[in-house]
Length: 267
Image (cartoon, rainbow, N blue to C red):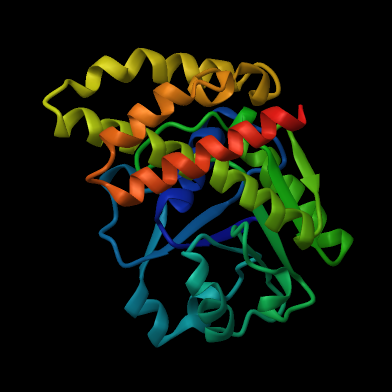
């Protein structure tokens, strides 16, 4: 197992990875432990990460070679738009470079020993992540890179590590956007409607909690209820009237209801 890991980026994914690795190395004595952990970030070093070598972005840019010496693995956890920039900034010769993007091809880094390490999860700064239940998806050219990816997954305590192609990964990422990002956006719309009408947003928390439970049980379509599912045209018309001052939301309501009814007809 490679012993020196450099994580480039201390955002949602990078912070979750580094905190988990530090935790695992305190309690785990497996051969997958790293001897040293480095982070490149423009943020101040958190007090609880004193065991990590902290490198400022500007400091790294002045002399990247000095920091990359003896580094075995680099994990890019920067925003998707910065992956290519980071990849072409440095000479990573002899170093296995991973990026963690679900929507970015592996070949963007143009290195035979580049790879993808994509954890399919939503991350929040400072939030706890149950890595045991986080599936990680890997794309790599050679067996050595695949093994490093699997070892990194073991280091995080991940139980499911799958190898998939970019074509599969970008579709998985698309599905994740619908499952997570749009779901949260819908909850945000519900919050806005309540707030605008002087109602407490906390009143909707129980149904959101039950919705989350329903999603984890089976095909979500089997759990769907509501006026569109029932074909309740009168209620849907009333809802659209309530949204007459919000044309964008009214159009979204109509499109979602139409899609549900079309799906229901096919079923």
